[in-house]
Image 1: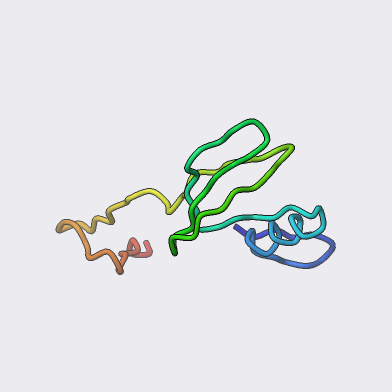
Image 2 (image 1 turned 30 degrees about the vertical axis):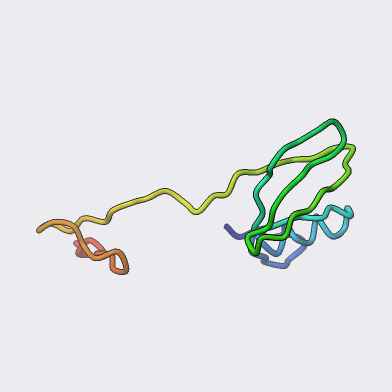
Length: 89
């Protein structure tokens, strides 16, 4: 996704990271929540490090890698790295 703001074009990742930085929001990536207690969250990163973080407000977002889609050409399924464009008429 691309955003245009004040004449500049930015990707959604750069735009979101900029908003987080401006507002002092710390994103914790590649982590799994183990448990949540009032005012404290316990999580583990993918490298096995276990952490706890005190919070007043937290937003937990599930991982998203996109939907599993299959591309089909007229004869049948295509390989995952290719896609067919319809012929121009």
